[in-house]
Image (tube, rainbow, N blue to C red):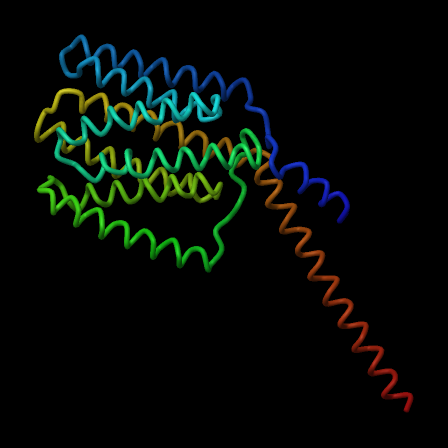
Amino acid sequence: MIGDYRFFQEFFDGQIVKEESERYKLFKIMLVSCFSAAGLFLVFAGFCNWASFVLLELGMIWNIYSNLDKKLSLILCVAVSILYFYFAANADIFSNGLIYIAAYIPLQMMAISKDYSEGSFVQIRKKINDYNKILFIMFFVALLVVLSLFNFGVNGDYSIIDGLSASLLVCSAVLRNERYFEYYVFRIFALLVTIILWIVVVVETGLVGSTCIVCMYLSYLIFDVVTLFYQSKTYVNEYMIQEEFVAGIQNQKIVEEKLKKYNKSKKEAESK
């Protein structure tokens, strides 16, 4: 059993965990197609411009097809970051614009480096322990305060919700880079807050292109919700279960060994 576990562990470290099913691939194609059609409708209806449509398309390709060629992923990251910064600055939500330039591009480069060292497309398989949870909460609170104060200092609108959205997005990106399973839940919450932020922008300012950005984040939300359920049925969970099961066997062996030593010492004491 232990030998099987070691093989199992070595197989999953730095390699593809499970090939995507045909149904999952079809879902991604349909998702991109539907939101592309929605984007084109918004452009021709006068709600969005072509720049925002390009942002929608590039953003979906970059996020939904995250196992693209590494160099292409970096190029898409830079292009999306520049376009998003432009729209975020026009909407006076500077924290959101800042994170795409100052956080997403460096994190994408780190992800590429991690892929080269650990494998091309390793699915998320780790869980946050109690110690890391404390550090992560501290990091999130500090980031929230800094980004909210920054947005307030540069006379940005919606300082609190903009800072909250940006902080959640950065933290979810960090979790994704480190391949923690909690990324999905955290990411979904981050996307919900960001969608609300951009809906407020649409309603209050009517900024051209902001509707396409709402569509972009909505496509991310649908994708991550479906992916969360998809990942829960892959070998990633089998890896976690196997790991916990082997840990239980090892703990049981330790208890049995201690019990044997105790019984042996007890018998020796009684014989004397």
